[in-house]
Length: 63
Image (cartoon, rainbow, N blue to C red; front, side):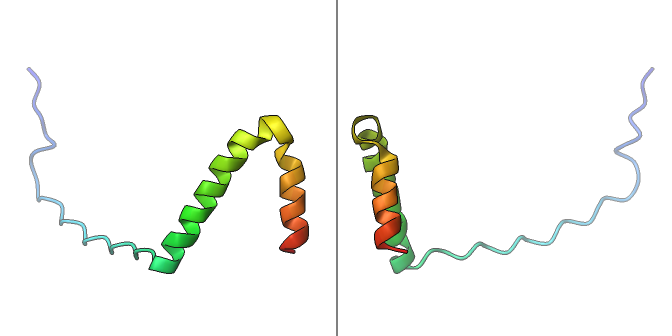
């Protein structure tokens, strides 16, 4: 017969609550939305016009 010994003994102490992660500020949310939109646009332009050309132009402008 099987005897479960794991239920015997002192109970483990509960873990302390994990600190909540900070939320994004409205400015950070706006920047994140623009980055996602830009990536979606590049996703559709890449097969047609070449995203590397667009990326190099943006890198040249915003260096």
